[in-house]
Length: 114
Image (cartoon, rainbow, N blue to C red; front, side):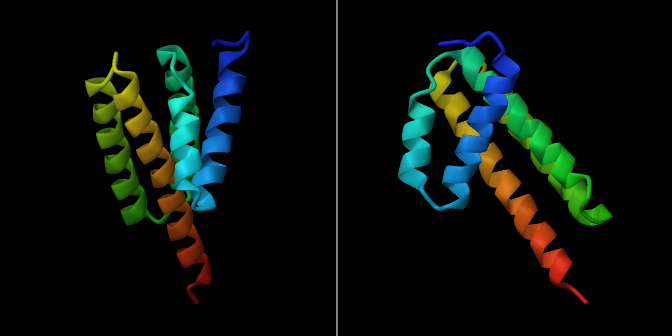
């Protein structure tokens, strides 16, 4: 089901997915993703996740930022290869969410360095 503001709904759903993933609730994340059946909705969630990953990746040191950029390119290839496949797009969303958590863990590690 699509909403009147798919961009805002995509961001809300992306935040929801990130909450599940960050709390280690893998089954809840999988169930949440399974509930997204419309390709358009899946793509808007992915766009929100991509925006978050790119924004958060910009604050990483140069080497880590370059690596994050390469991972974003690979995620884009995954998305493109599953353009019309909802299950494949769900895999893309899951990996995109995991990428954000990885970027956040890098940021936390860097913040703890002397």
